[in-house]
Length: 184
Ligand code: FNR
Image (cartoon, rainbow, N blue to C red; front, side, top):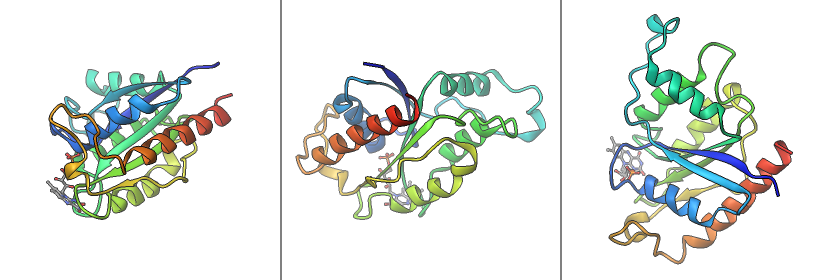
């Protein structure tokens, strides 16, 4: 069975982030055909077009990391009905140089998270607007808006909320099929 490498980009810098915990939960239930690496935007400097011709080492390393993977799953909270600025900065960095986006050819998944009721749906919708011109095919179904996460994890960060578990298991199965279809 072919193994596909998937980079999970978490849209939060918070140490106890629900998004980071969801990323680990996704990795735990991922089918054996997928190998997941998890990163956050920690340590990425600001995108600045003035220094594009001579990019800093952190941008280069981030781009190269994405390029080594077959797929990318964004797991993001919603900030003010959009994605957090740190995630947008990371995407802007990876999207350049112009027409050479590191996401090109990568199969994309998007997971919204929130302790609130709406599960980060507006952040997901904004990613679905941002990514099509700079990425490979985006998995549209199943949609993944994980809300009410306040009681979903134990003190160690493990997922304990039974109602959430089928969603993440089904999502990773669908993502594995999506990667296999596009990266055969
Ligand atoms: C939020 N939060 C939030 N939640 C939501 O469902 N919709 C929203 O629009 C916002 N807006 C928002 C803005 C800002 C600046 C902050 C700091 C927070 C609450 C947010 O979901 C909560 O803080 C989560 O814990 C953030 O995700 P992580 O870091 O736990 O993954």
